[in-house]
Every structure is written in structure tokens, then in C-alpha cells.
Length: 244
Length: 244
DNA sequence: CGCGTCCTTGACACCAGTCAAGCGTTGTGG
DNA sequence: CCACAACGCTTGACTGGTGTCAAGGACGCG
Image (cartoon, rainbow over all chains, first blue to last red; front, side, top):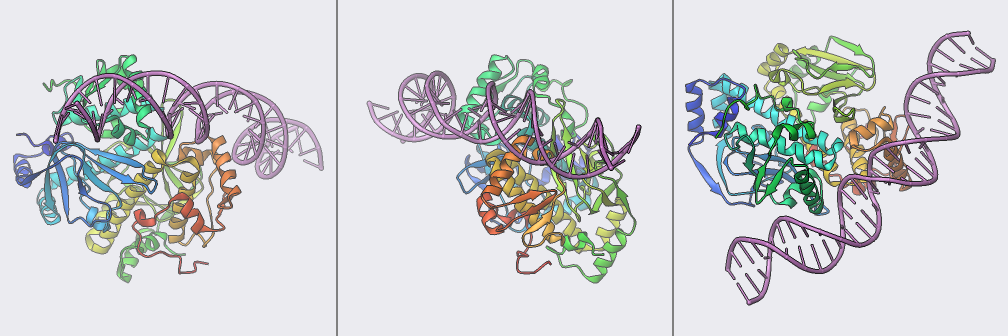
């Protein structure tokens, strides 16, 4: 079973076999969490870092009026911020969308591994910065992109991220979200998500059915979305490889 | 002349006089930058950290269609991310809104000071996490809050941040932004910003004229905006003190 | 079989964008 | 000192994107 964390970090930083062994050891003890459960709730004070190995999780915040905004999707290889415990109380929650295999790593274990492995330290810092860049890009989309292009942009981003950890082919990947979840990501009503999906399918850009995204022409989709991969700060594109 | 960086960091972390001396030494050499200039442009590879001592700066991104989204405001005491050089090319730009006094700190100087002063290291990490929390809150607002409440929320946040560095009284602060700038922060057109400002003034919540924000009843404004200060992760509220 | 969840569709209302014109202030050059 | 341009703010009319409400259908599950 491959380690998505290593797959991700290697997009940026070369890891020696010693580094990889250390990372593999870190994720030995995992547990399965059901879908639609909280990993960390707003107000808690986490004492460890959660790493998603399988499944889909998300950061979100509930407002007083009952609305929910999803602020990030955590795909395999992603984890919540290593320094989060510095803040004390969580100002948002992290939950699972599907059943997940999750690793809990104590702050001490993290400190130890980054102290012993400079490459891993750099790679973790890089991953944190990328998460932040993604957040900024979501904000840009929310403020400036129309609903259809914003949605297309999200699919482009997720395509790259899933591909990086070996979970997407050149033209499709699984995304177990309801239209209502998508709405909470994109700041749209569920009804409008439905309309925009039909819009995109009508243009031949995307189909999204029963949790599976199919992109007949990823290049055309990127053009429509105005997608520029630079903000993910991955190295060369993966499109030359044939993952699957 | 007080050091806004110290004022900010002390909201969370107690700093010894040795720590403060080190921070004061760090900002000895500053330069003045005109308004409406870039400090760092997209695509550059920064080799130092920029710290804003006076004035107002902002992170932004231009889209292919000419639109601009502002992703963060940098008030005195704020700096761009300490690890940003790890990413290589900047995926966005940082510019000044007004003339600014800016300090440029080499990566080495940063590494040195955090290695020698654990409190400062913790405080810097905390500041980075708070910047991220602010970004998340902006995303939440963009996705879920109506234009008027989103605008009110922004003013509440800035009020707290300016107060922290001694640049706001209980009921007002200077915010040298045009309505068009405000639109690029809030994802609104300039015309609609104008309408919402009148709306808020009509409710007696806020007036915003020639770069000055006046809030007759900050508590009422917070309630209208649904503002909860927790995400800023400052300690106790400052409202008991009388900063002016 | 019946229930719940999610998706689909249509009608309608409204928030917010666009376009355009006019106004006030500031700064600059003749 | 005045004319003029530049800029930012204000206002109105109109359009359109998106939300809301509501009803019905498809599907899975107990």
C-alpha cells in the first residue's frame, strides 16, 4: 500500500530512503473513521496532527444562521496544520465526508522527525504553504469568478491533487460529494450547483454523477476555468506520466 | 516611536526585554515606499521577509479578465510569510495602498532571531496561523454573508487589528481605501460598495468618509455582522483599555 | 412497501453587476 | 487666477445571475 504523504511531498522535495522509512513508520498506526463525523470540533484544543491516508475530509465552519462554508478539502496525504495547537481553541471544525483512514501523530513525534530530517521539514513547510495558496485561490474564485468557471476551476484543482497521490486518471477521478456539499464549497445553493453542472455538461466539459468526475477534455476545461497550476507549487506537470 | 510588531506579538506571547531589544534591532533599517507600488510582484523569488511598520499594504492577484482580488490587508506589524521563499515563484503580488515604512529582513536574520528567542519563534508561528485564520474568515464571508454584513464584518476585524497596534480609538480608525479597493476586497462592484455604505450609514452602524471609519456603536455593528473575535486568537479583549 | 436522501425542474423574487451620466474635489499648467 | 483634466463618489435605469420555494422523481435502505 503506497503512502500518499510521500507521493505528495516528493512532488517538491527529493526524499532519501531513510526519509521515506521514517515517514512510513510515522503512519503505522491508523484508524478508520466513519463518514460524516468530526475529527476535530470547533473549540477543541488538539494535541496531535491528523493525517488523512484514505478517504475525503474537509475543514468547515458553521455560522449562526445555520449556513456552512467549507474552507478546504483534505485528500489523502493532506493533514491539518502542524502548528495548530499553538492557537489553543480551534476556530473551525474538521470532519470526514466519507469513511477515512486517519493517522494521529503527536506533536512530539512531528518535532522529532523534522529535527532529524531536514528534507522532511522543508517538505512539511512547503505543504503548509501550498494549503495556504489553495485557500487564497478559493478566495479569488469566490470573489471574482462566475459560478460555472469557479466550479470548473475546483474540478481542475482537485484533478491535479488527486493525480499527485495516484487517485485520478488523465480524465476522471472519484469525488464522493453531494451537490449540496459542492454548494457549501463554492458558496452556491444546491439548486444552482445542479444548474451549473448541467451547464458544464452541456458544454462537454465535465460530467459529475454518483461521485465520479469525468473530464473528456481536461485541457479545454482548464482554459474555460482560467486554471493556472502555478499556485499549487508542484514541480513539472504530471500529465506525461500515465497513472493508470 | 513604538514598534507595532511588538505590540502585536505581545497580544499572545509574553516577551522579555531581551526579546524586545532583539526585535527593535531587527527593524532599525527601514525604507519608505510610495503608495500604489508593488513590494513583491507575482513571479518573483523573494529572498527576504517584508515587514510593514507604517502604512497599509495588501496581497492581491490579477486574473486574466482584468479583475483583481485582494486577499489580505497588511496593517503595521504584519509581514509576508516568513517561509515564502521556500515556494520559489510568488503566486501573487504584494503592494502598498498608501506610502509605507517597510523593513526588509533577510531569511538568515529571521532564522537567527527565532533560534535565539523561543518566545519570538512561537509568536511568529502564531502570527502566521492568525493570518491564515483571517483568510479563512474572509472565505466564509465571501461564501455565506450578504454584502452588507460582509462589509460590516470587515470593519469589525480591521477595528480590532488596528486597535492592537494602537491605531484605532474605541469608535474610529483611518482606512485609506477607495470604494473601488473595498470592492476588490469584498468581491463587490464599486457601485454596490457605495450602496452598501449608505445602507450601513442609514442603519447608524458606520460612516466611511475620506479614509476614516467611524463606528458610533461598535457593539451593535458586531451583532449585525455576526462578528466573533475568536478567529483572531488574540487574548482578552482590548476594550477595557483606553487607547486614546 | 414506505421512508429518507439526493437530484431535477419550474416559477418567481431579489441581490448585485453593468452602463451611463453628473457632481465635487484636487492638482496642474497656461 | 482660471481652465481643465483626472479621479473618486453618487445616482438612476436596466439586466441578469443566483437564491428561494415548491413539487416531483429516482434510488437505496430498512
